[in-house]
Every structure is written in structure tokens, then in C-alpha cells.
Length: 116
Image (cartoon, rainbow, N blue to C red; front, top):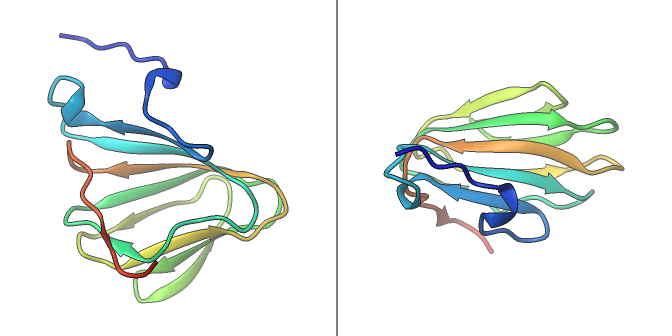
């Protein structure tokens, strides 16, 4: 059965909408649609599955991606894949909001937080 879901129907906070596939017909993928203000991001964490991070818009500055054994700067159009179990975090280091999609290769989001 096809599901058409308006973004506003998804669970959300001020900075992200959350689609968890297992809640919508057993889809084997989940994602966040993130819109982060300057200085905001995530704490260090891991997932037991791969995650793909797609930066859609970042007009000024960069989103700093931490993990993968190094520090990386991303801008609009940057994609990166984090293998399962890789500690990672990100922060918007620019002067304007950044938008990105965090794709979880699992129908259920599982996060282990490594710092507060």
C-alpha cells in the first residue's frame, strides 16, 4: 500500500522532521529532514547501520562533519556515507541556516549517544 505523507504530519522539532520507515508500511529506510541554525548540530553518536548525509543548502560557511577518523567540511551538494558503528557528529559553522537529509539504512532508527 502506498503512503503519501505531508511533511507536517511527521514527528518534528524546531530543527528536523523525522521519518521512521517501520511506522509507514515497513519501509526499510528512515531519514531526518534537518534545517539547522548557526552553531547547532548533534552530539557524538553511532548507529548499527550505514547513514548517508546529504547537504542540500549551505549558502555561507560550512557544515563541519566529525567522524570517519577525520574532520571534514561540507557545503551544499556534499554527500558523505558513514559506515555502521562509526562515531560521528556535525555542526553548522556558517552564518545562515543549513539544510541536510540524514538517511538511515534501516526502517527503525537506532542511536547510541556517546556524549551529552
